[in-house]
Amino acid sequence: MLRQILALSMGIVVLTTLAGCGYNKIQGLDEEVKSAWAEVLNQYQRRFDLIPNLVSTVKGYASHEKETLQAVTEARAKVGQMQVDASTIDNAEAFKSFQSAQAGLAGALQRLMVVVERYPDLKANQNFLALQDQLEGTENRITVARKRYIERVKEYNKAVRFFPTNLTAKYILKVETRETFQPDDEQAVKKAPEVSF
Image 1 (spheres, helix red, strand yellow):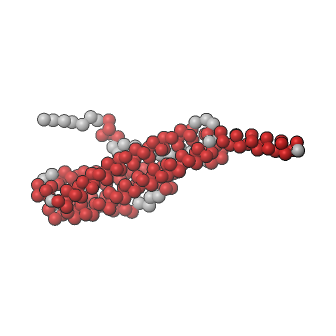
Image 2: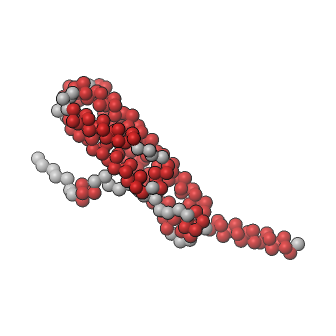
């Protein structure tokens, strides 16, 4: 009888200790990070899928803008060649390569929109307007998905770094902090935009 009470008491102590070690919290935060990452990839895929239609529509009006159209096509191809999955968030180098490729594609799309400004007929084309609206909406969704991912990574990284859950992270789960998105162009962030009238 005494052994059973002692075993029960030890079991309660062990369960209480495990509950306070953060094991389940870190696992839950890890799942939230992975879910947020999946949404980021989903929105980037949506943009990736819109680009061929956008380029085709612009080609009909601005066929002599080959450099810009080729830059968009090449940037899209570079993004398409990347092998991106849930493991990307655990590999700092792969994460930075992904971010760089996406920034290159975003820049090429911005240059394409500048070209479009030169063609009033194209700007009035209903197909183009619909594609442009979809692309704009997708860019907004990407921004929201990235923001949510950054928030989830922040919570996860805090659990991995703060005591006592850092002990569980380091010694039991053997996990480290995760990379998060950085500005695409740090120089542009530091420099105020020029406005002239």
